[in-house]
Length: 294
Image 1 (cartoon, helix red, strand yellow):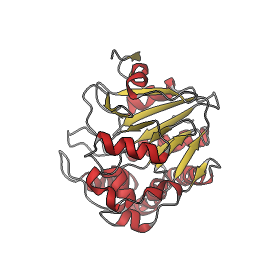
Image 2 (cartoon, one colour; image 1 turned 90 degrees about the vertical axis):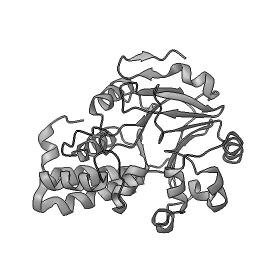
Image 3 (tube, helix red, strand yellow; image 1 turned 45 degrees about the vertical axis):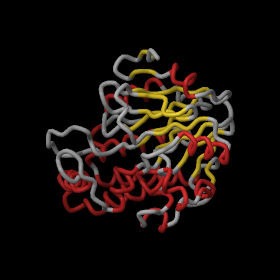
Image 4 (cartoon, one colour; image 1 turned 30 degrees about the vertical axis):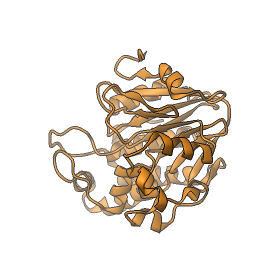
């Protein structure tokens, strides 16, 4: 994978990289509908929300043994920096960096669809800290590419829409950005994980993909029942501020953050999926490269 920063300034190279990575994500033979199905062996490295934390992304790249073809890396929420200094948002570069990783390690790197990416591609505002993050992202692209911004934004959207909604293993792991609120389950099409995402899934407030990436209010009973119906032993999700980097939300769910000073990454042995309490002991703090003390 190239680390040449000049690549990120060339609209032609940026579009080539993003569109090439989108093709790889769509053509993955392990993909069925909007879900990537991992094998029951190897290590899956699961990260939480990154929000343009380049340093932590680089650490995750080093930790994940992608030269070992049986190992996989799940990434999420790549854009919209958590830095509230008001500086120009150039987090498109993190998208390009991940696209480069996908091209270097086809079918091993899996950025999953998150609410910030989806909102960006749909042009729907997200307000946090220093105003509308979607608008700031577009301004950042314009500041670099000027008259070529349109083609770059189209390539960015194509890359976002190629991201799977879920990554799961035959052994019982499932990674999604979140899961629907308990009181929205009546509106949720559980079969979405077995089919392609439709326009209605993302363009409507209660579309099933929207419910997955925006959900926050879960219950132990709901997640247990959903796991039973989907054959999932352990859910790994992001979308929540986890002060310690990773936490047990329910016996079969872990929530993880990778963007702040306590950010973590989690290697999971796909051969044997354990409970959340057992799995969390392997989490690694990104600031130190050391296992967490749970």
